[in-house]
Image (tube, rainbow, N blue to C red):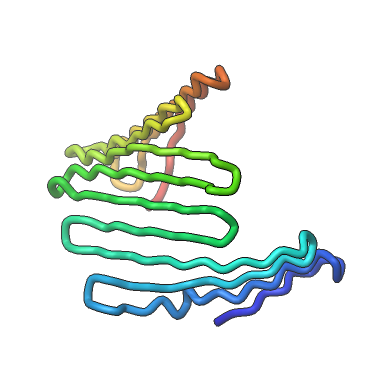
Length: 159
């Protein structure tokens, strides 16, 4: 367990006791853990629980917190080169819900990743290996609800 006290004025301290470091394997495929926290600024405390189940072809995780957050994720390995993922987040106090679907496709010299979510946001990321230690990257994100459109490109040097 860890206890963290950042350097802030005394009324803004965040005390965090985290049991993720004590995430225990219950079976070879199932792990369970938890977290306890208290924020001095908002005078709120909470507790959360987490579970993870994995096999050679999939990973499923779940988290529930007293703050109202429920998060579920699932990744399925279709083949050595293709993985599909889904994510679901729900806050039962604010009634906010977000779901997303993503993919990861590895080609011979490039990797294509993308996601779509329930808020109308679509994103894609292409990374192409030009040479050993030199990669070219193109990314794009379209958020239809906010009318926000982004495009970027870059080079990475080194591995």
